[in-house]
Length: 257
Image (cartoon, rainbow, N blue to C red; front, side, top):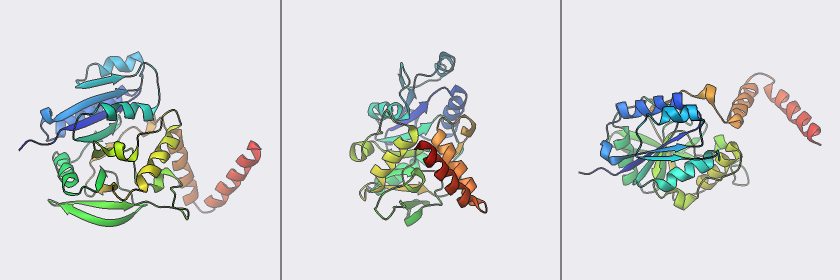
């Protein structure tokens, strides 16, 4: 039986050291025919030092921007170039540490459940689970977005979409829309979350079980919004933290006037 073709997007910018680890860990462990994988490099105009290292890796398609345009544009060009039946999207700082057969399991699940548009691999304990589905012994939780009283997503963490490693159908973005370009990363992620989280025909699932991808790039993150959100959560968790945050927001609003 011929397995579906999977396009693997490696999204990178000025992090050749973590990209090499992401690339090599994936190819060393994955149990999927190489001729059914399409490896696509999406480089957002990295500096020459990083490009020299990247050129030592073997990709089927190399998309190298001449100027930095942000994560939204960098991802869109890879999605549009993908010719596979499914897309595995990887930013350049995720080691593959999971079971070698994980991709086969995920593809079978997407084939068996047409309403699942995307499967992610990082626990989302802050979100409720609508149901758990099982395919060939693997379990997948269907996530429920945390909507406000107006039926909207207020923050990235409350939506079901995630830009952490995930597999999606090739037509996923034809249905929900592509990534917003020319805006800050956090706003881009929020826009995608709002587009995905309100659809009943394209639900998002998380694969249960042991860790599949391990994040190694926290110290090199280009997302200041995510770091700020993590700091806010840490402050809010300590006694009196919510009071401190309220005072800080009041002072910020006063300064802006």
